[in-house]
Structures are given as C-alpha cells and as structure tokens.
Length: 562
Image (cartoon, rainbow, N blue to C red; front, side, top):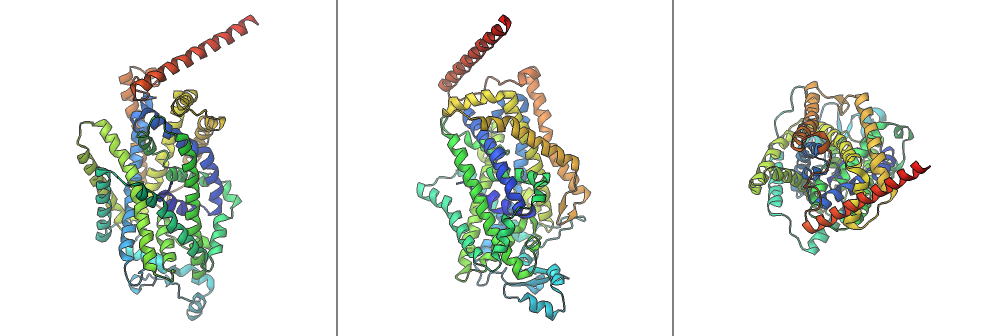
C-alpha cells in the first residue's frame, strides 16, 4: 500500500490551505494526467537500468545534474520530515499520561487577547459572561489542542525578523532518537516476515478508519466534510491551486525526488512495474482522501466548538495534523490514551518509512560518487549532518522555517527538475525509444495515454504553471505575514544551489563526451546491467533502427515516384 507522511500529514494541510473542495478536482486530474505517468516513467527507468537517480542519466548524460539537484531537494525535505517524526515521538511519550495534556487549557500557556476553550467549554455562555458578540469571540478563541501544540510544544514565535531562537532540548532529544532509529534502519536494512509486512501495511488503515468513525460521530463533523467536498469554482480558475495540486502529487507518490528511480533499481528486470504504477497510484489517492475525511470531520467539530467557520478553525500551517488528530483522540470515551499511543506510533512508523526511502537515495548517490567509501561511515555522516540541520526546526521559529524550506526545497526545486527530467526522457532520449524499452522489459505495449501525457501534457502544463508562478512573484507568507528578506534570500539560495547542478554537471559531461551532441546521446554504460539481456536489447534496438530506415526509404521512394 502507498501510505506515508505525504498522505496523512501533507495532503490534509495542503487541501485545507487551498480551500478544501477547491483542491480535490485539480488534485484528481493532476494525479491522472501527471502523477501516474511520471510515477511509471521513474519506475521503469530505475528498473531498466538498475541505476540510481544520478547513474540513470547515462541515458542523457547532459541531464545528470537533475539527479544531483533532486538530492538537494530530498535533503531539504527529509530534514523537516524528521522534525515531524520528532513531534510525533514527543506526543507519543505524552500519550501515557492519565490526562492527555492537549485536552485541557493551561493557564501558563495563555496568550494576551486569546481565549482558550476545550470540549467542555460553552462558547455562548462564555461570550455572554465576557460581554462579547459571537463574532468577537470567534476572533479570540483558540482550541486547547492548538494552544498545547503552539505554545506548549513548539513555544512558537512566528515572527523570525529578529532570529529563530534557540532549539528546545526536549524536541532535540526526540529528533536525535529519530535519526538514531533511521541510522540503524539504513545500516542494517529492514528484514521482516510476511506477517509483519502485512501488519505494517494494514495497521495505518485500521487506525485511520477508527479515527474516521469517531470523527464522523462528533457534533458538527458534516460541516467539515461538506467544506472538504464542496468545490469553490472561483478558486479552480487560479493557477496557485493547480500548482499546489502538482507539488502534493509529487509528495504523495514520491515522484520528482529520484528516490523512486533508486528503489526500482533493485527490482528484477522483468518485474511488472506497469501493474505497480496502476495499483499504487489508486491506493495513494484513496489513502489521501481517507486522511482528508478524517481531518475535515474533526475540523467541523472544532468549528462548532469554537463558533467559527471551518476555514478559520486553526492557524497552525504545517502543524495542522498535530492539532486536528489529537483533538479527535481526546474525544474517545474509552481509553483515549490507548488510541493516542496507536496513532502516534503509526505516525512515527509512516514517517520513518518515508524518511528511510528519501535518505537511502542520498546515501546511494554518495556511494555512486565514492564507491570505495565505507557505507556505514557515509550513512553515519549523512544522518549526523541532517540531524544538525534539523535542529533549526526545534526552535521557536522552526515552523516558519519548515514552511519556507517546503516552499523552496520541497516544491519549487522538485517542480523545476521534474520538468527537465520529463523533457530529457520524452524529447531527448525519445518517447518511442522509452516505449520500446518498456515493451522489451515488461512486455507491455503502452497506449496513447502514457505517450501523450509524458510528451505533451506534463512538460507543457508544468512549464506553464512554473512560468506563471515566477512571473506573478507573489510574496511567500507564513500565517499571513511576509517572510523577512534574509529568509527569502536563503530560500532562493537553496533553489540556486539545486539549479546550478545542471550546468555544473552538464559541462563535466560535455567534456567527458567530447561535445554537446554526444552528451545528448546514451553512453556505453546505459542499458540493462545483465550482459545477456543487454546484448538482446542492443539487437532489438538495431533491428528497430533498420526497420525504421527501410520504412523511411520506402516512403521517400514513393514520394519521388509521384
């Protein structure tokens, strides 16, 4: 099954940020026309060549910088993924308390001009006692779950003009535990029996369906569900929503990061990756929708408790999941601590799975660059470096930095490199050549759907969106405020570092291949690694070329006679 932080954490947050129902239609169309074809293309490239995300560019050496640029994007994403796992570990530890700490308001965490309310608070009676109107009350209320997350856990200060503050030692310990677990997973690998594999695949769905049932039985839940399902037709006409849908599909399916190419390189040469692409893309969509129903049913209940509209329930940005899910857990009548432990254990498991895939891609690239280096040492250094970077997210300004890195490192960089990746495959290597490779590998004749999407729909639509976003140049915001200039400069510097990999490695390949034209052609190392299979593939390629040549000659001769 395809389930990870991209589904459970990022999808609901992105959908909420982009208007709920206004996001679903673009997301479905993007998955069908962009996500699934790109997913299949990356699976086949890795499987066909048994190569990672940099070596795979033996097919078009000039584009090798795509793999290294993706590595920078992956480093950005995995650094904050692990900070989310650290938060889940923090909540997991506090789930063993007699009273879950986010169920009640804490006077020591109170803010000026903010009124904390929990499930037992009567909003109307409180408003009357304070001589406030319902509208005034709505602008000042904050749920106990949001208060605990923002002030108790993060100690957040959204204004980073004067710095981001010092790391919180408790969150740093959780972050260290996360990276230690990752190190041992990457070092030893994961060996599990079939029964354990089935458990880890089905466990998240059991927890999510349990939360869904509880969420839908809460007062006001349908208000949130309707917000989730009702499209805002005006927002559908904005490019920003479509841009968000594309970046979310990249996160959900892990396309554009290079990790899929690396993982599929371990497949058997004739493994049915076509079937995998279809099944996993459907499972991924259903998982995201399930997580969305869970989140928005809870948001509907919180909206009723706080006396506000659904779109004004929380202002936690990427931390939405750490407000809505705990709110639902607190409302279980029977052993809420048990369900809380199960949920955050699930979140940690999913997070580690996502982080393991991304980090292994980084390690594979370093191993390709330095094959003689000790793998354990490389793994340790990568984990240590990313832990050091991740401490930034444990500061009071950490969530603001997380959203900034997500915008530049997790969205903009990956979006740009995905365009170059698909153009290099479909137009430089050749869509028909790729189609022949797939036919040779898995004996599947691809329909016009795959060819049209990869050759025209994806490059044209993504390029159009990117040009619009750059031209529009809207300010990057966090909680409605523009980021300070140094923060934005750091974001653009991160983007530049990734983009500069293209000319840097391109020039190296031009020198190695002795010319641009040769750097645009597959080199001698491209193809299946098995010598017998590679020989058969070369014979097939030669026969195809001869056949095409004869067809062209015949056509030319026919035209001449006329």
